[in-house]
Every structure is written in structure tokens, then in C-alpha cells.
Amino acid sequence: DAMVIQNPRYQVTQFGKPVTLSCSQTLNHNVMYWYQQKSSQAPKLLFHYYDKDFNNEADTPDNFQSRRPNTSFCFLDIRSPGLGDAAMYLCATSRDFTGGSSPLHFGNGTRLTVT
Amino acid sequence: AQSVTQPDIHITVSEGASLELRCNYSYGATPYLFWYVQSPGQGLQLLLKYFSGDTLVQGIKGFEAEFKRSQSSFNLRKPSVHWSDAAEYFCAVGRRGSQGNLIFGKGTKLSVKP
Image 1 (cartoon, chains in turn cyan, yellow):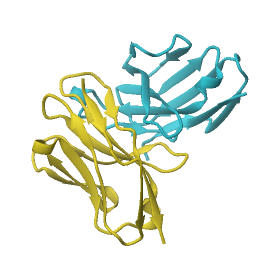
Image 2 (cartoon, rainbow over the protein chains, first blue to last red):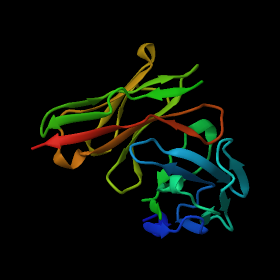
Image 3 (tube, chains in turn green, cyan):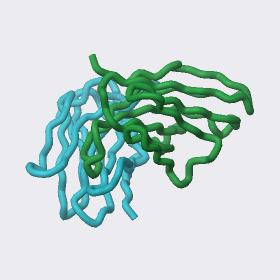
């Protein structure tokens, strides 16, 4: 089945130690997104790629970076994680924008713990 | 500014009872509307969506939702809840003519009593 796969499911890192989360998709979708979801809150969009075009949300901290080396893969890099960055990180894809009509397909997320 | 309000943070219903989860949005035109469900420790799964046409939309797992323009609402319903429906439910709005971002409500957590 076509899907969005995130690895690892659980990631523990130390305060200030860089960490990378990965996402792959077999849907061949143009758009890939990274969301941050803290406990009992709505997912918050960090950034997205439309093909190779990167779009950062205005309030995404500089500490968060992303790479999309090809259509299938997208990475979230946290350069110096703080305790406040502990959250569930969700990768999602959509076929296209089309004004928001393309549904998002989510992966199962990576739960990040910062010690 | 566009916004999505889910007034109920937590709802508990008995198994077999009917369910309605509320969603109100603020948007200047007819938006794209979605309901997603999130089981514990999982990603979000699309239940149903409304783009245009019939205002009553059917989704997966026996869910339906009705778009009411006059009330700016898109409430989710299920006639008979199953224990496996216990999860968090998110309403989301997509802005026509814009790129990418969905605006999510804060979610409603559903608990199901035996």
C-alpha cells in the first residue's frame, strides 16, 4: 500500500545535540509537510516543500531545518534541541495544493524526547 | 483571520450511543473542510472532506458530516459509537486559492464507555 513512513517512531536526544527525523513516501505526491504537535494541541505547520521549493512558516524557529533530496524523502533537522522541542513530529504529503483541496496523508509520527 | 473552533475539549459517550462533534469556522468564503481522527501515538487519518456540492458528506468508519453555511459549521456525526472510535478528532479548514496550509482546530477527545 502506498503510504507515508516515518522513522524512527521514538527518538531520544540530549539537550543541544542535533537530531534528524526522516520521512519517506510512496504516494509520489508533490508536497511534503512537517508538523509539530505538542500534547493535547493541534498540529502546527513548520514548513513544506512543493517539489524542491521550500516554504518556511513565519514563526518556525531557525533551529528547525529541512531537506528534501528527492521526491520520496524529506528530513527534519533540529540543530540544537531544547526541552521545549519535545513533541510529536508528523510528516504529511498531498498530491497538490489546489487551494487546499488535496487531503493530507499523514505518517504515524516520531515522538521526540529531549533529556 | 481564518480560524477553526472545536468547542468541546473532551466528550464521553456510551458505546452504541449517537455522537456529534462540533466544528465552527471563520472564513470569508466557502472553505474546504476536513475531519481527521488521531488514535493514541498515531498520525492523523482523513475521515471525510467537503469541497462543494451535497452538504452532507459520508466518510469512512460510518461517520458523516454536514456543512451548514448559515451557521459556519461542519459537525461530525455517527449514529452508533463503537469502543474503537475512542480517539482525538480534528476539524480542519483549507483556504481556497492559497498554498498548502490547513488550519486545524484544537481537537476533541472522545472517550467511549462500555
